[in-house]
Amino acid sequence: MRLFEFDWSQTFEHAVTLLVACVIALPVGWDREQAGRTPGLRTFPLVALSSCAYVLVGRVAFGSDPEAASRMLQGLMTGIGFIGGGAILKSSNRVHGTATAASVWTTGAIGASVAHNHLEIALILSLLTFTALRWLQVDGTERPDGELGS
Image 1 (cartoon, helix red, strand yellow):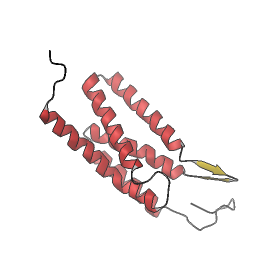
Image 2 (cartoon, helix red, strand yellow):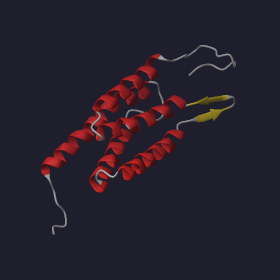
Image 3 (tube, helix red, strand yellow):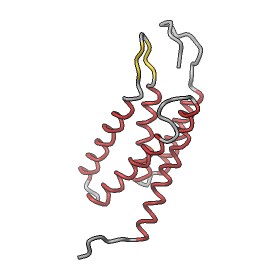
Image 4 (cartoon, one colour):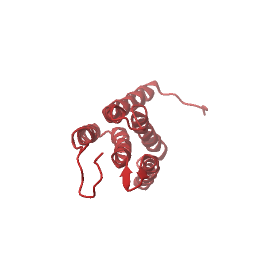
């Protein structure tokens, strides 16, 4: 028995998969960076990258066990939700950062989608998240509660 087995073909496949997850998350990170949000260009691709990596490791380690896959996704959702929660801030009567927090969570789903070979889901998530962040804003308009939109 060899201590470490190294399959170059699988290594290349995983490297491409991880790179794709990272690249698909870049538009979301770019938008948050441009908007001056704290989690920015580096954070979002890293969340997608790490989510993809954990799912890949889980698939290799646990094979096609649906219960193990479910636990893996549940753990990712919880952990990424915790990271996103750090982006939410409350000051006076105003809460901000919820869109950024939701984007962090979505970026984790991008990485998991890529790892499960569902590139179409990852691309749609990235496109819809970028679109929502970029064009569904109410900056400078007053809401019924008297607060300004953000």
